[in-house]
Image: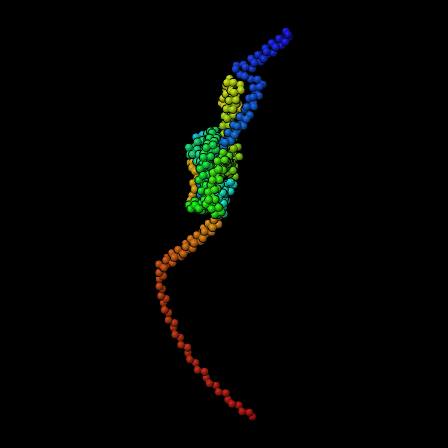
Length: 427
């Protein structure tokens, strides 16, 4: 009995001593909390990298929006075959703190025009032999995607027009990105989806589904009442599948918009074919301090939760010492900007009115050739007429040649004497 009591007392005393040892100055450090801290900071650091990635995407998207790469006008490609004639815009990237100097980036529209596979598929549905269901799906999806592109592009252009430095776009841009995605996925897209679903039900009783102004008389296959029956059916389908369809369409539309920023290629400082991967790598170098700030935030907040406020305060002091160079670690030091030139005014590319389409490029080339030929012929005739008018005004002087009388020469007359030959008689 006595031995058992002694053992229990010794064990309790050891636990108390261990607790005192691990709570010096209010810092709760032991093997268990240290393991918890490591398990907490690893996913948090991954989240910090994702945050930095979103900021880099937004930076690239603002430059793409300035170049007019996002398809925001439903009258042009890829919604139709009409190709927009965009102004060429050179933008600033990696600006100095005062904004006076920057590197230069340029996006060529023609080299980035392809790749809208979903929108290309939707455009292919708009044919004379397309069924009403194909047109129903096309009208809904095209308009939702266009709304997402238009809003996102306007947000990106507004950021550049306010001349916000790229550093702050990378640092605070993910907040805008997350807010944009949340609002559109949860509210804007579902509400717009409902509106488009019901406004396009009229296709089922429309005479010509390719002409919104056509009269209503019902489908040729099923007649007016057959179209009305399909409208009732689609109303019931909407009520049963709205939750799934609304979320699915919202996610697809947002995915298409965000994914666009990855596929664009640019010319960076005179080098063609530069993609988002290179830009992200440069961001890691030029804006390393942004990533360091995010990781520092992760280290401090997790230390406060796991070890207590005193441990968090110690980490803050250490990080400040690193930042000001007291502790020689290049944790916050970014690479120096190079290849800089005078910054250009921020402007967005505008569409120059044009009627070029994919299907009539050959016709347009032929037309240009014919116009050039006609202009050349006209210019030749005008030049010929001008030359004729010029020469007609010049009078040549009349020159009279002197008359020369040739002297008359009389040849002397000579008489040829007559010679008589004597007659010879034979003997």
